[in-house]
Length: 163
Image (cartoon, rainbow, N blue to C red; front, top):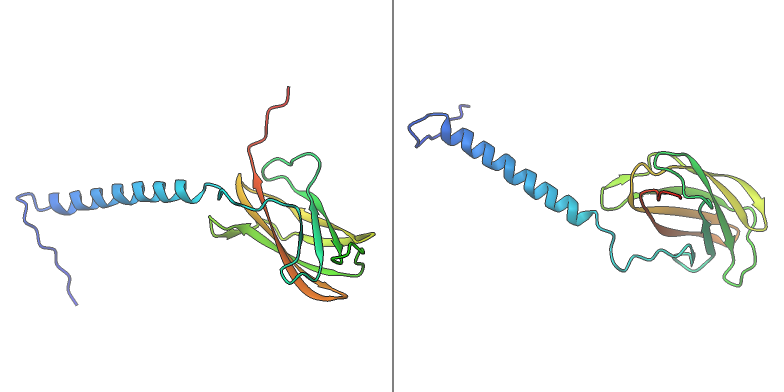
């Protein structure tokens, strides 16, 4: 199979070169515009850290560290699991997932619930955010009342300078 290019300009490389340069510039501009538009946090984003699970089987509270961690710093969170009436849930197992929906990538680590602390509270270790922006933290729960899941949204900002 052979390929060919039709040239209509006196300089045999000018049209092809110009078209390639123009296409590269257009793609760069479109890529930048898409990235800028796609990276803004949605206006109606639910940032609550205490909510019912998708099917309403449990109520989950997610507690980040008191001091916001630096980008690329490992840190731990706490997860509190309760029945809808507030009764703490013991003996649950969790699968942790998440990522940046607007970037299409997952978490840079594989966080997991490492231990039960008591009174329905669990230790979530191995959390790390590799950049600023909107992140999702997804918990799949396998507890005594059955399986369910919940997704939390969080926005990681640039660290503030302290006086």
